[in-house]
Length: 272
Ligand SMILES: NC(=O)c1ccc[n+]([C@@H]2O[C@H](COP(=O)([O-])OP(=O)(O)OC[C@H]3O[C@@H](n4cnc5c(N)ncnc54)[C@H](OP(=O)(O)O)[C@@H]3O)[C@@H](O)[C@H]2O)c1
Image (cartoon, rainbow, N blue to C red; front, side, top):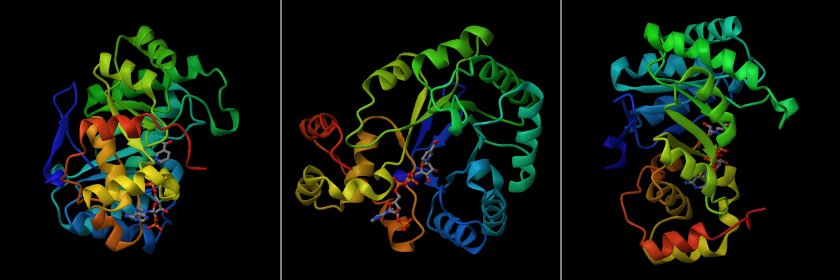
């Protein structure tokens, strides 16, 4: 069953193959209840971020779940506008405090540029943050470290400056966005690809081929979309606040034929 399966990263650490996404889940009861429910049905991997503003509620749910800390894989992310050595130490500490944890399983640079300067060159800032994360990794506060929304050349620049290859790159990967170049780069460098927005933030339901194949495999559209990302050796992070969907999204223990995976991979766009 997918909830009990792991990928193993290059540092030898296991990471559960499906993670619970938490973007746009409101802080307070909504985030608390959704996370607690996800943990109660077997999710053991939570994808959070300082920018989501809900770390405290997620931390409370983790604590109240009664599940041993070592059995839950917790990710959070350095806000995209924080780029620097000292500031990264401070931000990681803030996230740990909000989550009520003394270490993180995975910490990611949320994006290579601040959201208000997408595409801007922040190479030096990323290198400085990456150096701080390597230090925190050595201290054991961050068991694994990685990046998000990074292109190959942006990964190259932090690796060239430090010699340390990210364990993970979290990118938008879903049907209609093949991401061939970055996926092949990550495979070559043994960087695990996490697939964010596997349901295209709710827009997956507009794609006719997905409906056709969901019917063929007798699964829901959401299940087909999540399974597709697994067939491509990536790690999906579906988000929902509805219990029936949080549960449905874990029932993905079926196979999609190679030819159908290729048909889905050939789709570009089509979800707007
Ligand atoms: N690193 C980054 O920059 C970045 C960016 C985006 C996302 N992410 C991560 O990836 C996670 C997932 O991406 P996402 O939040 O964009 O959304 P998503 O998982 O692609 O889609 C979520 C949407 O689909 C709905 N949904 C979920 N399961 C469903 C089902 N079985 N049937 C019908 N509808 C369903 C949800 O509804 P309800 O919520 O109303 O239940 C919500 O509207 C995020 O939460 C976050 O953890 C990371």
